[in-house]
Image (tube, rainbow, N blue to C red; front, side):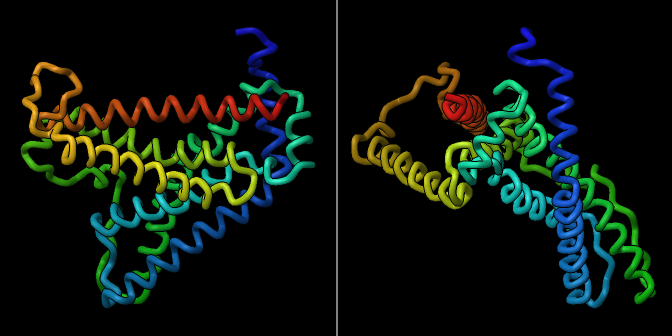
Length: 264
C-alpha cells in the first residue's frame, strides 16, 4: 500500500503520541471502571449474604459491564471533533485519513474488547478473594470459558454457526453504530446516535408490518430454496447475520467518508 495512504511507522507514531497525551485520562478511566465493578460486585455479594460469586454472576455482569462501558467509550470516538479547534489540530496531524480511521477503530473497539473483559476478570477475582476475609465460604476462580458454558435449545444447536455469527455481528454492530455516530455528530454524539437509531428501527418496523400484514406479503408461499428466505430457524439466523454484517460494512464506510469530508 502506498505510504501516502498507510505507513506503518507513521501509524505507530500516531499511537505513541495518543498514549503520551492521554495517559492520565486513560489511567483515570481504568481506575473508575475497576472501582465501579468492585463496588457493584461487593453490593451484589452483600445482598446475597456474602456468598461468593459463581460463574453465572460472572457471565451476567461481564456482558452488562462490557456493553454499558463499551458503548459509552465507543460512542465518544473522535473526541477532537467536539470543538472546532480540536478538529483543526486533529486534521493537521502528520498522518493519513486512513491511518487516523484505523487508529480510532483500533483503540475504540479493538483495544476496548480486550481490556474491558480483562479488567473485569481481574477485578472479579480481587473482589472475590477480598471477601474471603469476611466469610467462611471459599471463593472459586472463574475462567472466561464459563462465559459460554450453557445449554442452547435443540433448534439453535442445529443452526449453531449462523446463531454465533448473528450474535457476534449484532454485538459488533452495536459498537460500530456508536463509533459511526461519534464520527458524524460533533455535539452529544451518543445521544444523537441512539435517537437516530430509534427512528430508523421504528421506520423499518413500520414498513415490515405494513408489507406483511396490510399488503398480505406474509400470505404468499415462500420458496425454501431462496438462500436468505427466513422459513426456519437456520435461515432466520442466516438472514439476520448477513444483514448485520452488511450494516457493519455500510456504517464503517459512512464513518470513513465522514472523516474524509472533514479533511476537505
